[in-house]
Amino acid sequence: MKFGRPAGTAPFTLSVLSAGGTGVGMTAEEGLAGTISLARTADQRGYHRFWMSEHHAMGATSVSSPPLMVARLIAETTRIRLGAGGVMLPNHAPLLIAEQFGMLEALAPGRIDLGLGRAPGTDGATAAALRRGADANDGFPQQVLELLGFLGDEFPPGHPYRHVHAVPGPWQAMENRVSAPSTAPEVWVLGSSPYSAQLAGQLGRPYAFALQFGDADIDAAIRLYRESFQPSDVLAEPHTLVSVPVAISDDPAEAKRQAATSAMAMLRMFKSEGYLLLPPDEVEAHQFTIQERQILDAYTNRSFHGTAATVADRLNALHERTGVDEVMLVVGGHSTTLDQRGITLIADHYALPHLEAPLSAAAQ
Image (cartoon, rainbow, N blue to C red; front, side):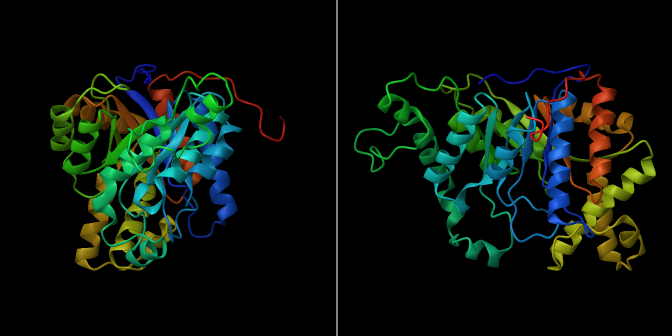
């Protein structure tokens, strides 16, 4: 694997994650168009990766299938790595994911990432509708191994899938008497717990820690990952990424208002009211109980919000404490315009390079 290097003045590699935010008052078409615009900006402003997360039955996001969005973004960008952060593997057959990401790799060699998570990405009833059994999480390590076997066409003799092949992939190249692909999707293990950290280490894969979820202990997880790491044929040393919720604006008050829209969506989810991104004015006008206000404030404060300088100070402090190799900015407030402006402000703060804008798909 060839990872990105720190760009500009940042001591870490910088990337972006979007959930395909679709706020109240916005159509799915507008939400997806905002995601496309965000990816273009990230590409042009020197970010290393652009990931999208898989969610289902949530009014606040329109990306239920990251592979579909990656396919679209390949034509909208020129250099940035594109991927899922992540695919919730227990929702899918490993063979299907290997086929999808094999196709994406064939369309954009050397630019495709595949982050693997085990959460359902939705509520229990929707998870059941996705044909996800109650014990789905228990089989996650085996599913990851199957997926890796399909991607590399490397099942041992006697394995039940020894003669099952993901196409496109190495087997197809051999059958068609051409060289095997020189690149493959970059597979990451995602999580926010010791379980995922240890699995990533044992598999010798890069590890992405989601700091946007709850009160997860990043220090313990990163330490466990490094302690349990076993070199593999794709990675000789541990490599870590942390995803951080951000809301960035020239006006710190506006950044906090944007962060509160995401916090309100989390509060609504806890109350089984549906994950929605309400307009900031509606959030401010809401009558909260004391407990609700505590939850809202906790999630608002967990977000790295403020000016670019303020957010960068917190990112730098996080890096100094954990030594992570990459930082991924998680955007997803009510305003996609503010999200786009925010990643531009951080790029300017760290002096990331301006890159030539690609032709649009229509112009091509």
